[in-house]
Picture 1 (cartoon, rainbow, N blue to C red):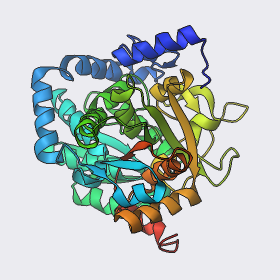
Picture 2: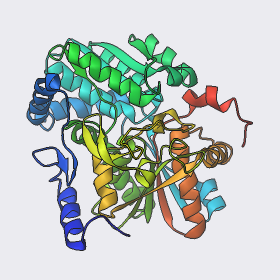
Picture 3: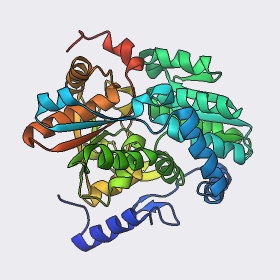
Picture 4: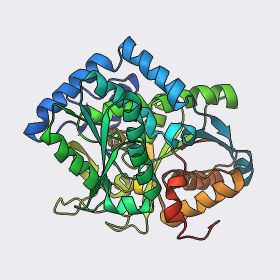
Length: 411
């Protein structure tokens, strides 16, 4: 696999990542990451970084966090052997079931962890952004759990196609703020949340939902989501009798994928991230950032982004609201550049077909985001018969019914 670095440098960077030495003190994952924020937000980010260093790995915080994961989130989530899918694909297929976590997706792991941190930092109010709505639901639930008020910024386009989650957020006691600016999807929601944070950086805690943005968010979210890969690794050894040959996860901002991949980096496993191929290969026709993007700064981080020749960030297209983002987490950019993780894409029609197959063969209605990973895994299985495959099922697809009703069942 080709890399952007000479072999020795790629090995050095990857070794550092595996050892947990990234990000460095500047918040860098090799050349990626860092912190590019308005001067007005520097004190808020400094306080957050200090708080992360003080609390995240302290025994008291970890005891409370692990207790909430067990007793409220419902962890560990199941690892399911997909017997009928295995027969159809000619491979041994295992599914890590984040759809069975409280609120229906992996987002809750990060949300409850950050809500506990916000409480320790003395926040009076929490704000969050959401695309597919799952992070908004998780943030609303987590804030209700710890007793903090919550406001969720959501693009108007996403509010329409994820209407069930909008209602869930409100029923959990949070305010939903419609974003009518920009592309009216996830990127615009993050922009508005950052603007709100500037108005009260002392009293507001910004509960960012993915492994993106300025340091320390990519690190913080990775650490909270790594429970996925830690559990999956242990479960594969005990239930399957060995580690998988390949592991798949969908990639938008990248929290689900980094949560699964990070604990597996040192193992002899093919790691494959699957982005949204949308309806075509042209700029604006997909959200395949790592496949077609170039380096640049987006929302506080130097990473790979979708931009034109003039450096203008471009709008994206995907049937899945959670993958419809113009950037990607900086650690994913590094893992691609070193060659450790392969990033590919699946188109809208392929994702829909995979979702229909999973429903009718395994009785699992997965999220449109995860259906991209299933589409890519199916191709891999056909080309590599007999391999043992692990698929991270990031969430359930109930939220996607308004979109799915536009397409015939079983497609």
